[in-house]
Length: 176
Image (cartoon, rainbow, N blue to C red):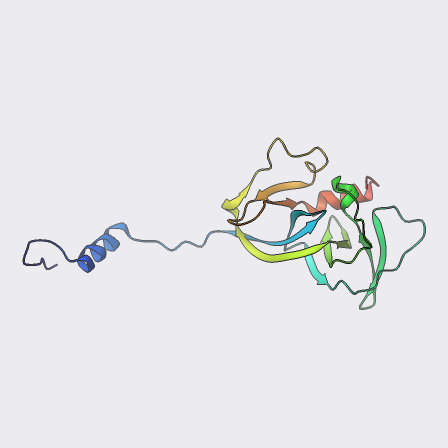
């Protein structure tokens, strides 16, 4: 190491010495892929591992008489018939006022594969586990059984991470 004429280190020398002493370690933090969307103007997310496909809003959904109010109908997807549920009632949210027009998330969990109608798809992103926080005690009673974590992005409102297994279990029990 060389010292300048004035007995001080140059900036480059000091930075090199600091880097050598601190030993910067590049660590890959575990993360989870989230599919971010909106229902009744609120932000929600589902784990990317549970979302098998994002289906266009113009995919026809056919009404079937006798289905519960939480079931919009069925759709025909590459030779398979899939149900499409409206999660609003399960989550205690106001029902949509307009006919369903948002995209459909094809979700597989709890031994069920079904479409979940959303109002708006916001993003698909990887979120470090350390940024997922436990739901607060103040979370509404209707949401509490379905929310496993909250994620607060730097900009915008928090998103509630839904547990797809709990959502489908409640659907099977006819709670919606």
